[in-house]
Image 1 (cartoon, rainbow, N blue to C red):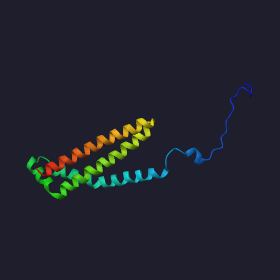
Image 2 (image 1 turned 30 degrees about the vertical axis):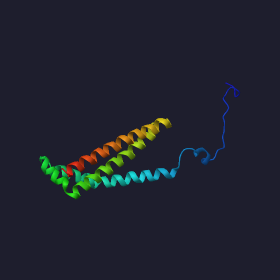
Image 3 (image 1 turned 90 degrees about the vertical axis):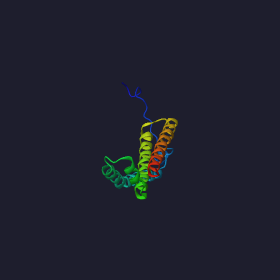
Image 4 (image 1 turned 60 degrees about the vertical axis):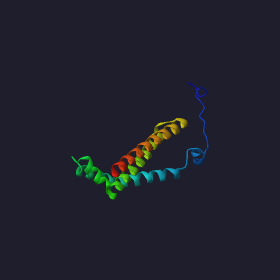
Length: 135
């Protein structure tokens, strides 16, 4: 194979900035990263509280569970757990979709649908807690 048969090597002299243009801002990801860390830190004590509540109410009848949930601190902590858990879920699902769905339109549609489902589930959970607390 002669040197004339080899494909020509193209050398571009682009700066790092020109190669990165259109790839998004590096600053936007840090807020998302911190929100995930903050929500996971909030979930630690809230999850421990949830497990302790389940153990405490093990074998309890509906009236006892309703009385437990009617206490303001208990219903407030359960609502805080729901908010933190579904917020953390939404952040995590968004990262997964952004990493694995290459098409921009499909990515946006998938994120919107999943966030809608997550919002619906969070509202249903909050309504269940409030209904139990006020029954």
